[in-house]
Image (cartoon, rainbow, N blue to C red; front, side, top):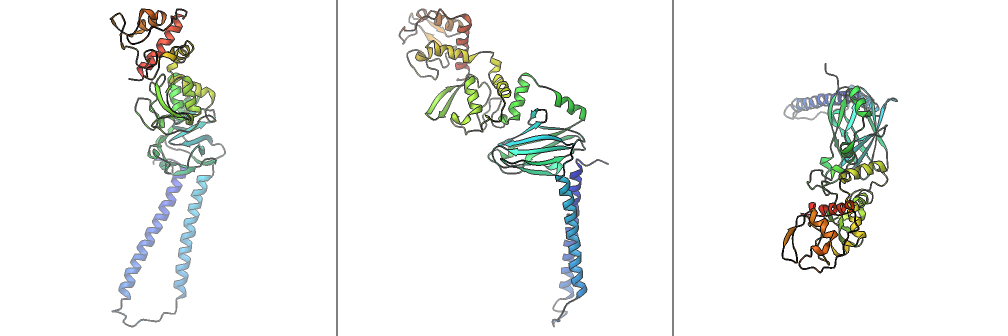
Length: 399
């Protein structure tokens, strides 16, 4: 015999079947009696109405039997409800945080996940809350459903007796992507769970896990597709049109911008997208640093340093990064651009050209611009490369 998924689910099912069975019997009995009374006491059989004063036995029967049925259903319903609310003292605790539109599961050792991993035959207590609106944690297979309420802790529990993957849904309409607020309970062999529980992910895998566990991937894709928020693919070094307290402007996505976007998202809203909740109180520094490192590609190209150097050396006073013309050619999409020089020649703005143009600008006077740029021979090779990396970013993400 196949065991039930959980003991509580079996009790809930028994109560449902009991109530359904009793209701079915009552429906059939009442319908049959109605038909019998219509035929038995039809006016053609009894043209003269009889004066019935009462029947003590009938009154006792229709009072006692319904009372027994109702109290019996109440008892079994109460027993199953009590089982749903009586958490074993040795239950493993998992903190569940709901937000638009994802679930975050945090374990006692601090590990976080967007999927609920649990061991087979182990009681699990879910302590639940929400950071924005009311959601409802619903696992149909386990027969548990509990609202998660901002500023309030609710709880539910289960003990899975069968391995497998079971759907988690949100049963309370919570906004535009309510239907996509999905996850699963993965019931694992105890040894496999222990291995997962004690394991530590590294590199990109760990960062992606953090993005999922904080609900970032519910609105931001990692593959370039646009969803509720801008895609995170190649976001480092991109240009974003943002709206802040001073109006609309172009913003360069460097490390400082990414940190602001996570900690103070309402300070700069990307044009065309809605705001998101702040992670200032929720996200510890080590998680923020890991996410930033992933989004910046592990700082394979130090774009922040390149921008800071160009600001410090005055480059951005004459060269814009948004396509507008100032005193010199814009740096937007500069890499690979064909450049017409004052001596009549044409050349492609590759890395070698850009470095030489910084060191000896008089050698490459661009048609239409005055030769006012000073030489930057004092810059080291490392500093020059940082500037070129920054210009690559302005070109790769703004085609």
